[in-house]
Image 1: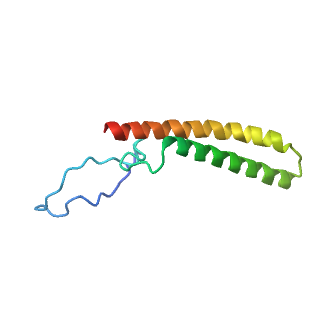
Image 2: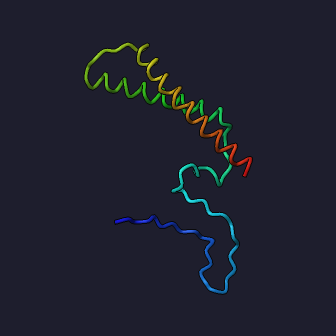
Image 3: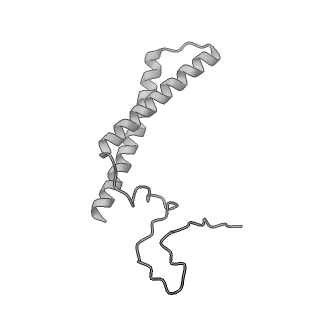
Length: 108
């Protein structure tokens, strides 16, 4: 059985004689439409950098919590290098996506 998502658009006329302005509706269920209806608040470089730093920090903290739970010892340097690499990958991905959204907004 296939169930389609239902979304509510407040610009829909509720009476037959009401006039409705035709504006393109971008569904949040369409891949790639995130942020398509609103301007980016930050530049793509800032988005990528903050995303990378956040992933690195969360990964490092998670590693420290696991070390305390299992009473194991790993090097802080190794943990920082691995989580930094993960942060760099996800930061780069966020930068590329933000750049695509910015390009789409400037062209559209």
